Structure formats: structure tokens, C-alpha cells
Length: 149
Image 1 (cartoon, rainbow, N blue to C red):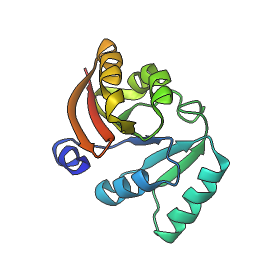
Image 2 (image 1 turned 45 degrees about the vertical axis):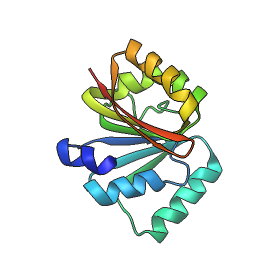
Image 3 (image 1 turned 120 degrees about the horizontal axis):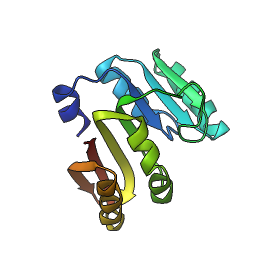
Image 4 (image 1 turned 180 degrees about the vertical axis):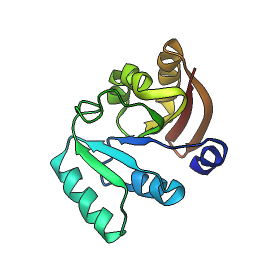
């Protein structure tokens, strides 16, 4: 799913919100070779992130330990692509922040939500001009791609 949009869109600035171990950031970095900011509040995630980053010999990914977008280093920044694989309630709480930090025509990829949660999220995002452009399902899980209009 990510490959499709990376070919069509010119991605320059990316953010992975709730990066955890960093896997989405690492995959993205290998595909686009552009700087990526990865955020997470959990200190164990930060430790795992740096271990995995070193193991994968990756540069160009910056980790910020902060809740969501709450870092002075992110103030005023916008992104062409935002990835997030976090729980539904956190995604809902961040909906306006996703819109604020996403450039016009920027892409938001949400993963890690359950299929039965999809419609609620689509309705919330539609109200703030984030338009669903693709959805995929695997077992009980869903991934959604939105564009900021």
C-alpha cells in the first residue's frame, strides 16, 4: 500500500507518530531516502528504536520522545506524509493534530485499527477534510489512507 503512494507523490517530509520500535520509519526511510521524524512517548520504545536503528544501519531518522506532536522541534512544521500505528482512541484524540501537521494534499496512513472501528474513524476524519482514498484489510486489522483536502 505504501509503495503505491510513494510512486505517485513527491514525499519530502515525513513523520511517524507513535513509532514504537521504529519499523514503519525504517521501511519508509529505505524506500524514499528522505529525512523522517519519529515520535513516541515511551522510553522503552526509544531504547528499542535506537537499537533497531543501529542494527539496520540507518541514518536520516530522528527520534523525538514526546507525546504525539508536542515538541518545540515540531512547532510550525508540516509533513507530506504522516504514518501512525496507534490505538483508536489516541487516533481520534489526534485527529485535529494530524490535519494541522499535514500539508495540503498530504497523505495520512493509519494502521493498527480493527475492522469494526473503521467507519467511526472515516466519519471523524471526513468532518475535518481528511478524505479516505484507500483502505485495506488483513484478518481483523485495517489500514486507511487519507488525503488532506
